[in-house]
Image 1: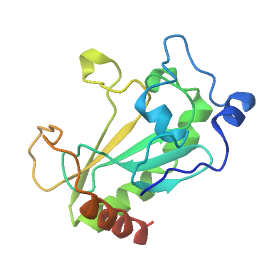
Image 2: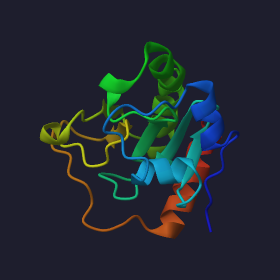
Image 3: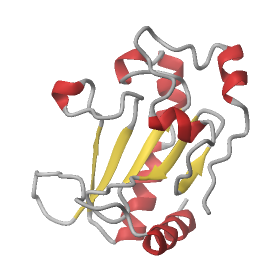
Amino acid sequence: GIKCTMTRTWGEYLARGVALAPAGYDKQNIFAKILRGEIPSYKVLETEDCLAILDAFPAARYHVLLLPKAASVDAGDLSSDAAASCLKELPRLIRAVKLASGAPSVKIFSNAGAEAGQVVFHTHFHLVPMFSSDASLASAGSMVDSAEALESVENLKTFL
């Protein structure tokens, strides 16, 4: 199966001060487990400071999540350096999502807090290909198909 691998261990990030968990951060959240390699994911891109994966419950095919490796509940918990090191990958991910999906546009958003719709309390940024001006974005009712996800990852990687 698909396995998430990191260039450094979670402990090394904590030791560097990159992943100092803010008060209220749950180190057992699903994205922390993916970052530690405890749960598989469909990895699109990984750098020293971030991981981009396919959303397991996508709003559309090629729906990508960009996760900073720094432990943070939402974007407001990120240091400026952690935000910059993660978000510097955003332009090439946008290009890859557009080219792989054929979509003319990509919606980028991050929910910061439960009232905003945040479900997993580890900072993440959604990149959703958009084919119309439909402003609604609901997650799929079912989990992503494995074969389609693997094909999507490979297509995305060709554009990175």
